[in-house]
Length: 260
Image: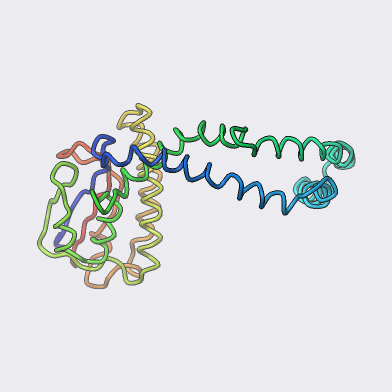
């Protein structure tokens, strides 16, 4: 076995995101509020009155809930009777409260404003993993280029602050089919999101290792075998893993390619 390529792609710190990121929450809030009337119109079209409320919401809801608990439930008849009696009585309240919520300055707009912080936080987590290709590349697009064997392109966007190029002899296409790459990248994207949330929440490296990396790495490793990996590579010596790099001090993805 001969290692021909090894690199670690680190996740970005919050302060490394482009300054324009601060505008995302405001843009989202403005855009969603601007669609208030359209959303209300669509809701009103589906449930225009109390009669429609009973057929669209009550009947469908009861049917779905009945299937969920099933007739074998010991309290099935009692539960369903309660729903059938109480839910239609709320029709008038539903129409009144919905209409009020979608008035200018109503609960819909208040809810959008209240949710802006959480939305912005989630977007920033995503950007710390994928980056903004116009300003900075994250670990996921770099991994994608690496798995496609695009050595020159990959190395042109590496950053010594958060990436660690270990071995750079030759880079080959990693997987035999696009579907294998897609599955692995999706899984790693999910894992890194948990890593970023854990780092921000103050969990230490040992906790992240045992609760995230040790859970996801076996799943990733299971996708790397003789049937999925390029025949020019050694599946036993090639790997992709969630780990922390000692040089950059960052959690991220380590990719290793080795030939037989």
